[in-house]
Length: 384
Image 1 (cartoon, rainbow, N blue to C red):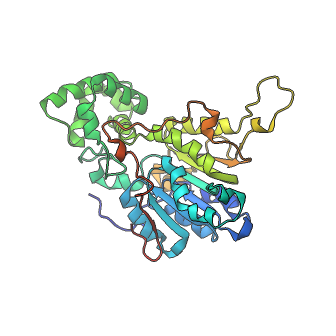
Image 2: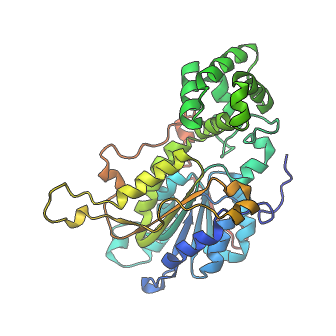
Image 3: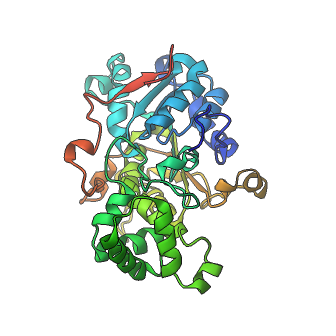
């Protein structure tokens, strides 16, 4: 297990300077009544991006969200010098709307305008979603995210609740395992691996990663292993996404984040594999596209785009950054700016965004209820 040390020495934020450059304009515009701009870090991790943004934008306040209690603890220590500018919340990023309603309710109540009177949550100026597994989770070997060491098959980003990777391996039938591996890991040999898992667990349940890696080495043809990288790469990714309902959460989180932006506010999303990036690209492109029916002579205001794409496509890190931080290699950054008010994005899609399904998890464990969700400020002490 990796020694628990301070966050700053363990974490190199991906595309840190570029993210600050792109979000700073939204956090530097004057606001009415002397309000402080709000930056929301929906995937706080060890607080590297948050520290950089708060340093560059001295008027901004932070609402930091993370499902990982150890990340909250480390980030609180790192961000303690910023005092009462920081509020940290233990929650998932797809709960961003509920979190902001809780945390910013006092801000709305203090403003004697129509929006506050209506009980609306004020819009925020900048949001960052840094997707995927964090450096903290990869480095804490006992969390089970790394396939190169033997560790318990856990893979939960919130280690306090929910099914583990071992639960998935030991309870899903072959068809479900095949679906998970093929959809979330893009694994060519998904069916072969699933059958091997079902056969092997009859002998003994899976508990640690070494046995799974051994199975994968046997199930995946040697020729594919020579050209396709470590045999555990795709399976471990698929299990992690399934355990944490990552794509389902993302489908909810991006529209919720856009809804939370004030006009002129910016959303930045860092993704690390094609499945994530595709969802982000589609969601932002939809907001930046007119919904006017073809042939309509005049575009009505409600049909106009409500987003402007700030980046052209997905920006990649430089070769120099990848040389310094190899975990940045697959990163893609997309940023969009809110250009006008609109109704909630769920209203633009009649079915609405789907709440993440979590197999084997009791409904009460799906989220921390607003009444009991724990928040903390780093002033005077930043731990929850």
